[in-house]
Image (cartoon, rainbow, N blue to C red):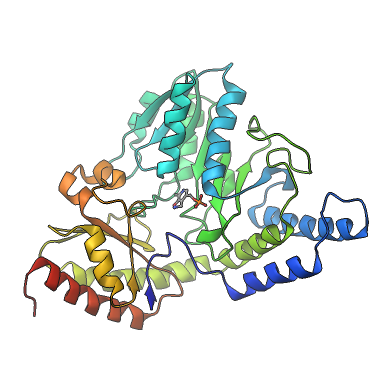
Length: 376
Ligand code: PMP
């Protein structure tokens, strides 16, 4: 099998799985319990949290565990809106967000918040002038993802933060860093809030985090007991330990791995761009791990299933819904045909050159068959 859908999810790394199993077997106590077993679990959990906060150079109290990035995004947007509604009801998001952000915005509108959508350039970069012009005194939150999940377009968060804070120093800046973490370097210090997910970085599914700077006011969405105000109940020590391990592994050799993935990306682009009817949806701000391609007159799901016959797994933009328009392709290229027919090839540092060659060979076979065109 050749797996090229790493942006949808990643296999759990062996070391991470081992940490999970060990924590499950040897640390069964509830970290909320006062007895020795509880203390043992609590100590292990504490050291995992400390490792995460050390890696990101933030306080332990600034790390909030969630079930994944969807929950982190909910908590970040709804929680900060509810906590800051005295100061305003205006929120700005980009046109390159994950669908979860738009669903949350739709909900926020139903409870009285006003949402503005900032434009981007033809390269997929946030239009700084448009952002400036949309900032208001009552703008309480701006949410712009670090890397777009469909195209890989990466935003300069530090610069965006400067623009936001210059226009309104009390506006909070949230970034969905789900597709950036472990692929390119990120800093929580560029933002007030950041969402991340474990299963995108070779960690287990079911855990994510929200970084929330001490400065940011946020209301909880869940209520209960336990050590975590924003995620009450019994903490999952094995998931926290495994996630901590996954973060440590993901944050090492980021630049070296990125360069390797860029070479794989170049190989694919150089070959696919020769095919008539194949359009590469990639600009210079895109990270190499995500490669979006539109196929003229072929339905993405038809192509994906045909590739599956060769045990090659690639992705669509969204959850494989037919006739679904890619919002990011529309936002960047404003081309309906291109946005209706795009597929996503996502690469990893685990991908081999041999896999890429096999993928290219099968791609051409399948493309030739489905498009009815002949190639040399
Ligand atoms: N944000 C982005 C940018 C994503 O790519 C994803 C996953 N597709 C999510 C949020 C949701 O993450 P999770 O599956 O952890 O809820």
